[in-house]
Length: 510
Image 1 (cartoon, rainbow, N blue to C red):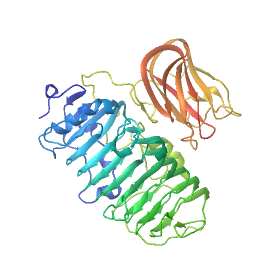
Image 2: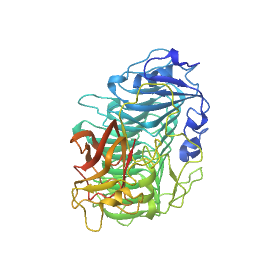
Image 3: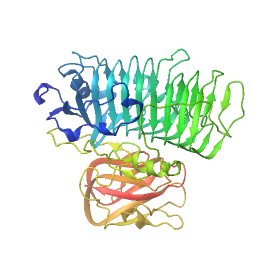
Image 4: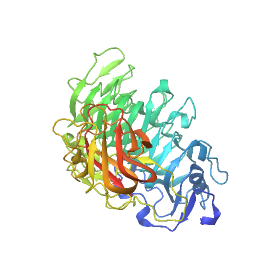
């Protein structure tokens, strides 16, 4: 039995609270097969603010199969993640879910960021990873973690649900990064849903080599893949159902079934990308079944000995049946509905199958259940609902100005509570500010991009415009948390972008 006094700093034991468990009712796809995926449902709920505390929670259970939900808030790093000895098998410098089962890890409160530290699932089953950000995990340089994978699964893993997470790197292999989600060595019955994956050389693979053929099946649905070179995913001898995903800026190749791999590709939206489907870099062919997809400014290379693009006239080469029910959104609305639902901090919203974001019928609260614990580490997650974290949006009724504005846009559009209006800079960079007549204390902002413009914002800074101090910096739209600051004006400065940004709302919260 876990008690607060029995564990170390950064760990708090809570009473079992059904509303704090993962939204297991929302899982679909192959993770529903083979007995289903429920994670830590029905077990104790604990909170952790360090990687060591996560390991303590895993090792402090009555057994390695005792259900547990670990609510994570703050920033997890290599430096605060130590090996914990005992009944379970952990390792320093990586979140290790090894030889265990029945675990949910979910971000709560101000958000959970795994900064340069990967999540390694090995010889484990019935695992849920939900509502967290994992960023800049390296296989070379310093620090290194998890072989450079944001989330890696290997060696007899089954029934995993990876849902509503934000995964990104800052480059490819030359910059020290590997993959965002890898599955190998007997990983089966996985669903990857409502995630945002961006800025990486490799999205992910199923099967690490042409001899690693015992993986899958896997479902990928309602994910955003943006600014990725290839592997979205790479399928070696595995079967994948891939539907309602948004692919933007794939530079080399996309869905790549090979060595007998099969992909059922339904109602996806591909935009500004190259060779989004086919067998590439090998003569060991895969196959695909396609329906309802949109190819928007997609280019196709010429066929060759080791280059087998599915287009430009994309037709099915196989037939695949799936054993579960699912709802398909029309491909045309996929970019807009995923802008509101995919990634961490979105309130675990999902599509209702008719292009409308909907709150889950059962799932976690995105605020923590008020245990007594140390203050959370300032953190950043991507794009929550306006009410996340509680309290009013202080931008409503405030003023706004900025460095520039594009034709037909207005500064006031970011403080009107209307997602259909927006401000754009006159170019790809610029700044937008919210201001008050009297000093106002804030600790968090949310930048919400307009429908159809998701993912354009690159690097940014958040400034105290009264003093010029930098409150936070990072990349991508979403929620940014920082030390509570009293000011009259806060500025969101866009210093890099992949196109002209469109900010629908600049929300501020105490």
